[in-house]
Length: 114
Length: 110
Image 1 (cartoon, helix red, strand yellow):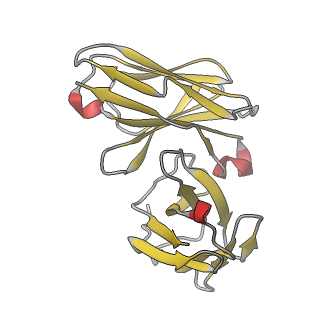
Image 2 (cartoon, chains in turn blue, green):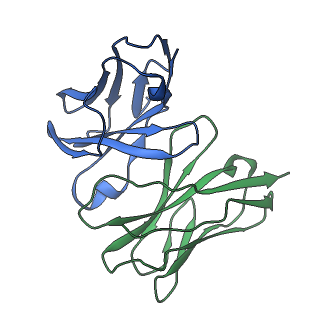
């Protein structure tokens, strides 16, 4: 069983469209995250959710919105896609407390905006 | 946030030990030292973390300098599957997001 899964693996879309990336974890973790890896391979935290509450938002444009229907899922919605949104997006999860230092990452979703 | 400095790349031979250095001269007392790695076309993978004492797990060992201004990730016997980008990350107690730098691209020669 995959611990942290993401769908789709690849997403190609036109500028201006709205798209979603889904993430699910079966580890029973309390906290989930979204990271963005750009073309220069820098990985940056975008959001983290803990018990349905947003606890980090690293100056991400409000076109990006995380939505968590339950503790096992954290989906990423992106409105009005721009060329600069092209990147690989990684979902991750962790427990709370001391164990939050160990994060488990999904395989990534490569988003290409044309 | 305190910064880390790592070599851009390192090369090693298969079945030999690998020592990956990380400098963090501005580390504060509450910063934990974490190591993650990212294999090609995969998400990052937790390797090890520590605060002051050296740490060992099934994947690697972490040696932390007495003044905590540097640390070394040790892979005891490198395999081709260890070829990846290795990230040294500082996290303050209480923070949740990871701040990744450029990392060290480890190349393993057969």
